[in-house]
Length: 111
Image (cartoon, rainbow, N blue to C red; front, side):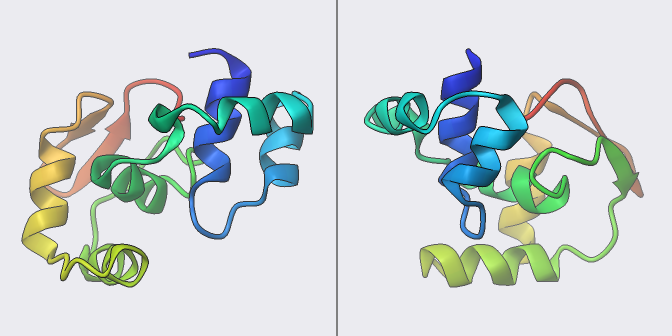
């Protein structure tokens, strides 16, 4: 994924602005806006969970901790009654993430 696509994906995470994504990835606002026209720039449920777990990709490992806050945030964003079990299931299936009993590690850059 090129930097404009990554910035577009990041800018679609609630609470992240286009300017923040532009600064992080060093691309123009116009490039992000063009990339946002691609439906693939909308985050999936797994990507929302990854964003919450990794502080929008800025943290690469940590303790698994309480997933209730992630589930609550996703439910607030999607209005989909997301549960801790849903979060655990999507994170377990996420190829970018290595899960252990009490910790996690991001296998590569996200987004």
